[in-house]
Length: 231
Image (tube, rainbow, N blue to C red; front, side):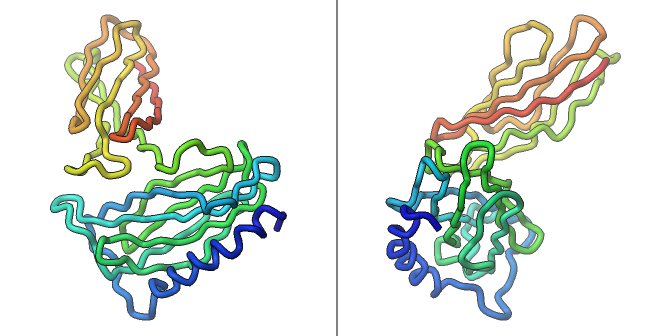
């Protein structure tokens, strides 16, 4: 581990000691069905080396019931690196009274193009994957643009787009504030409220179109997803 990471060992050890009390124990229940898991991160002070790409980050998974918004307390959360040069201090962590489970991610050489991608899950519920690198500008996870389906109806030229995401009533990380749908036919993009799940559009003629969906959250972060449809 390079020098700057070595300087952060004491800070990480302090964090690790605090997390040890939350480490998952045998018999810890999983989160029930209908649980939503949101991720955020905060870099450990002094741990980022912009040359080598090394860093350490506190990863927080927040679990709550997607209908009632009640935190899921005392459940076990699994943390998994799915790609890239990173490891978690603990494989599993229990949620606290606020429904939060915190873990330490250590990355060795996670530069742009060599990000660490990870997720958190409990029972049947899983978070979106999050990719981090040493140059990440914000400590907040961006929202996840999602397109569940794009189906032609109404004689073949009308398209119904299911963007299938929901918001939390308070300004949580990832809470959707608004959507923008570019239908790919030269018409002005359609702006939608964050609570919208369905968007509809009628094309003037048959053809192949690329639909681009951009989502913004309550912390002014955004992401984009595209899909193609042929009418």
